[in-house]
Image 1 (cartoon, rainbow, N blue to C red):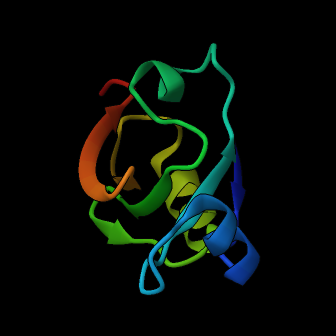
Image 2 (cartoon, rainbow, N blue to C red; image 1 turned 90 degrees about the horizontal axis):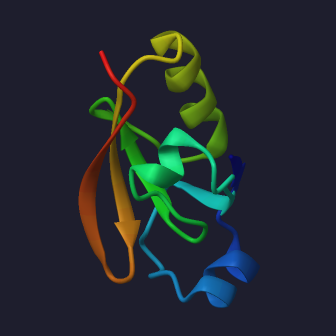
Length: 89
């Protein structure tokens, strides 16, 4: 998975609201557990394991702490937020 910062160009390209903060999923491997769980390119990760994400660095730090175990993501996708569980305990 490749994450991207949300700047004004990205915001316009993806039709993201002006107040939305997080890390944009720029690319995702279709063979990944995250893709199988429902994460798609264009989604914005807002929280990982109930910790707020406002930029890609936040996401990287939280994911590194989990050690590859289960992640609970709050994502913004297609106009609304929802939760996804990625991985297993």
